[in-house]
Amino acid sequence: MARKSILDKYPVSPDFMAARKNAFDCPKEAMLKEVPKGFRTYAVIVDAPVSHDGLVTVAAFGNGAASMYYNMGGGFVGASAKYKRVAQAARGLVVTAEKSLELAEKISFFDLPTVGMHFVYILTSEGVMRVVTSEKLVAANPKLAALFRAYQSLTGELNHAKTLEIQERNNKEAGTTS
Image 1 (cartoon, one colour):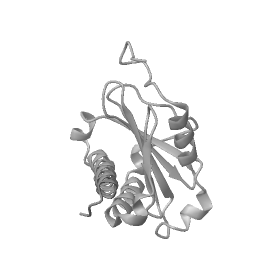
Image 2 (cartoon, one colour; image 1 turned 180 degrees about the horizontal axis):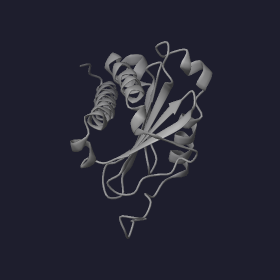
Image 3 (cartoon, one colour; image 1 turned 90 degrees about the horizontal axis):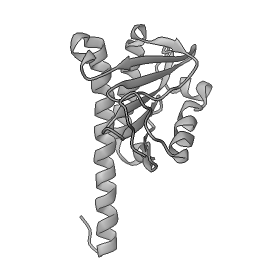
């Protein structure tokens, strides 16, 4: 179902909402043990537009785990175990988010963005914080730009890993190896 206005929310599937909820419900105490001592941030969840009707949610955890979900269903999970660069980018996003906490506001709801807006949810020992940004806003703020680059880096690593997985599957189906 296409949106009529840029103010309309993105269409989403039940699978997307369930996966997104699971990311928000990650075990706080266990995750806090995985981050550097003194850190409050243990996970970051980013809702970012990819087209007029497309939204991707990327989740990064302090243990290096990462996942990506698409608003109309589907996604990619488990890449951190196989792809070191995904785990590094996930940890990098958590570290960058910790350094960006002063940009965030504490919230109690996890809404989806409208067109062009990016919502960065930072899960901390003190609750969930949110940074609202866009490609235009990052130009004026170096800390916001660093946060933006960190989640773009993770998204790129996840997309690269997904491409490698597809190539590997296709090679197996064709009876070849890469």
